[in-house]
Image (cartoon, rainbow, N blue to C red):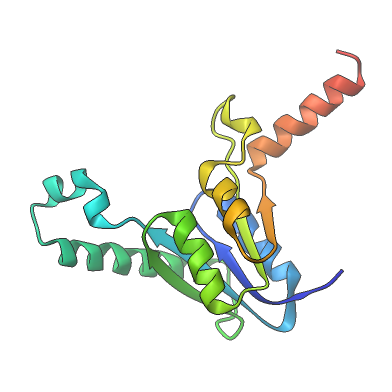
Length: 164
């Protein structure tokens, strides 16, 4: 299997995020690089945030970015990731747009994103961000399924095989 030199791994801090990182690290070349990317929304696109904070838009945006950077750094440290091979970035804007844009800017040769299986209906869907990234990315995309989705799929296949 070909190994990749430059991977962007989209991190949303869900339970799937650890699996996204492990998958990206398993696919990157020894001399390659993995960028852990998290996107925070624009404050102005989140009206409740301004009402709740009552503060300056730019200050609140900087605070959100700083908090996300801290969380990413802590996340990477918890997984004991090598800072020579893994970096962290925070984008501002709609998640799918930022993931695709940052991957293009970095010349990524692979994007790794997680899917979610939060409800019975969504278990059969990728999730809006993963689906949009898959459609719009200019490089290959690997979707890492949520554990709940994987278990449900295996159970469904087992039942189907058993004739139930």
